[in-house]
Length: 293
Length: 318
Image (cartoon, rainbow over all chains, first blue to last red):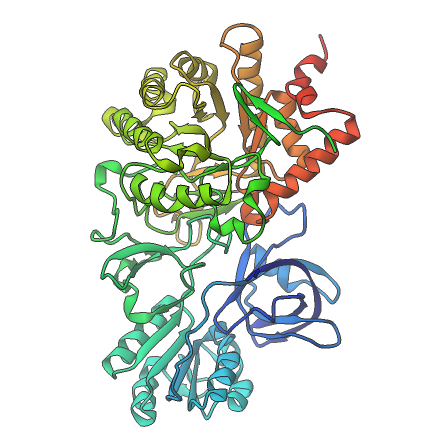
């Protein structure tokens, strides 16, 4: 059975949400296959676009049926040529959709307490995840953090989807002044959380992994790495992940991720906007043998 | 339906459209979108002797109508490639063009030897020798930038493969005279040429004011380089028709996004074409290009064989 579809999507709704754009697309066949944590790869600029690389977004939610057929929702931040083009789309505009892609968030087999942490619009997939977890009987707390109030996404939705919500902003314009990692220890301790789910910038994912691990919880994080294709053929979105055999490999975040156990990510490799290949990684280049495309 | 059958020396393929090495992984990923056996051939990601983790990230920078990549020939090594990837391609009935490379000419030969000895080798319709990688023994100079290095690699690979296995030397356009490299490769036993590999480029991130790729340099690909591919094919095809290079089939690659793009490379002298970067934009691109090429040939009342090199006959005499 096919587990991914490529379809021409049709925009049916766009709206500004703080600093972000929220798009709803009719994309038949996606909702039936998708699970929280998976993503969509959109072509940008139309058929003759000079911007060839796909833009990948977490699925915010999906709906298998409705007046228009199956839909999917995404949240975008218009910060480059591709996302700016997407932000100008209007109702009935078309966009090529490949989805669902990647591995979803694993769902615990027991009804354990979970904390869902979203940085900025990284929170987009967490409300759907919260709904799934609560259906399984899990207690769900959410933590939404951002630089400032306009960069938070889904505070109202969080209050519907979670048993408890904590908001943090760097500048104190909403909720607690500070970072998500400042409030996370108390929440894990109070709820006896077994799993911390995270989606947002890499620095935040690293810190929630450290906090979760220190408090006896497992972190499951959806990583951000720029992708050219989203389907596993370009090898640009790799990052160092330690496997079950204890060996580190440069693995594709689009097909083996985007969700990884936080303690399997070699966070120390990420510095100053670069991810180095750890010297102990399988096949790490000897200095003399680098190069080639 | 135009007749899309193509002959590449002793090799006959039902259609001329292939994936391009490094743009289709080793097949499973695209098989989710279409049946790989529909292609003329599936071209694997370049495999070397040992596993390679590739370069640090960022590995990619988007450019106008293209991209720069610096993957660093990440791959599983020949042993795992044969056991997992080639065996799987064999099991689905794909026709496979295996792309090989080495840090030294001898490494190319070892990879070819392991390949030829494997039970799945009978799905291999040819070997593409990726000489556009650095030669450790020659100060890291790319093999394909030097006729003698190119020649040595092709000759050593030729010895390791059965006589009827086609060998395509994949050339870089980053040379003063691509015809000289083509000639050296053909004289050493290449039964065909694949052209072109990426062009070397650098992108500067103007926010950070530093190179955007962690590896600094990368290979430029995509529709932006199509005219360079057409030029390289044109020059080599001209040299063959003038008797300066022995006549061998050319596989065209570089910036093909549509059937008409493919037809450009074919009219310049390519008997087959590969779809590379366009696959990142559209995972169905290789099959779409095949169908568009079929329609484009029909519109012109041509078979594929009629179209190969046709632009040389039709050029305006001044």
